[in-house]
Image 1 (cartoon, helix red, strand yellow):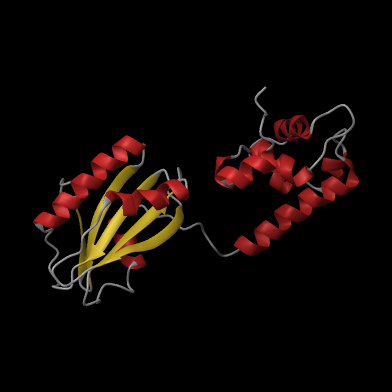
Image 2: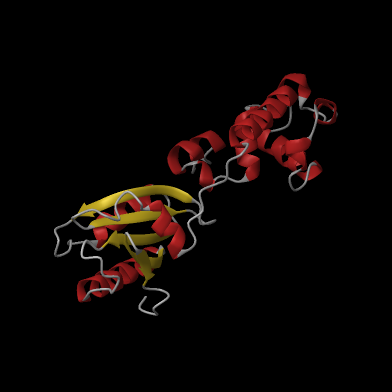
Length: 215
């Protein structure tokens, strides 16, 4: 008989991004009351506090839920308060436009060699990881789809944006740039990971192959 993975096991195997709200809450609560599973309790709580109301719930409101208890109610309140403090004044890193890519790559715009960078994004286009996957010569760099998509699978990325600098200062895509882009697009389709854009950057500006209708 196939064993059903518990929320904590799923998190360890797939990462937090693949868990439902109820599963994440179940990990925090750990156990449910006698006769009620923790996942069932989590769903009950989320049903009562719809949308973002759970994050604003106070101790009295949480303690009114049968089976929750004072200790678990305190843990929920403390968890959301800590999150608010850590995120205060910050926003999630979203990579949506060629300009945002250009701004993120200020460290490689003037490099004398081509740096090929991949932004690995989740389903909400939030940045999961940024990696330099290749450093080439002044004449270009050789990119294999395996180097790009192996980390994408590892990070459970839903989309990627690729980018590289042009040491020459030109913003025109080369034949090699176009060929690499097409190879990556085809590989991404097989894996179900969309290549959103390929952005060329220099110190003076940027060029999007998507905007140029070359993607």
